[in-house]
Image (tube, rainbow, N blue to C red; front, side):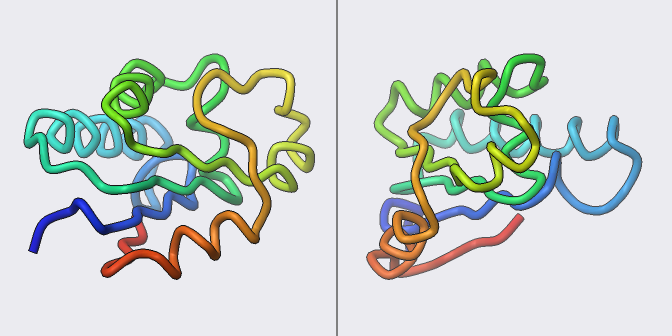
Length: 114
C-alpha cells in the first residue's frame, strides 16, 4: 500500500513524548525521509501542540514547505492556533476547522498518528 491515500496526524510539537529537542529531531528526520521517498500522503493535519510546527520558528518549516509544494495538503486547526495565540505566525498550510480534519480522515484509506 502506498501513502498516496493516507493522512498523517501530527498532534505534538515534535514526534513522541520526550525532550523537545529530541522530538524535533525525530519529526524532522521523518519528514525528510518522507520527502526523499516520493511516496507522499494526501494530507497532513496539525492540531493541539502539532500546530507549533507550522509557525514561525519551527525547526521543520523547510520540510513542510517542500511537502506542500509537492501537493501535500497541510491542514491546520484554527481553534488550536487561536488557543496558542499563533494565528499571525502561520508560515505553511491552510487554516481549517475540525470539519476539514474529519473530511481528510474520511477520505483516507489509512490514517497515521505521529
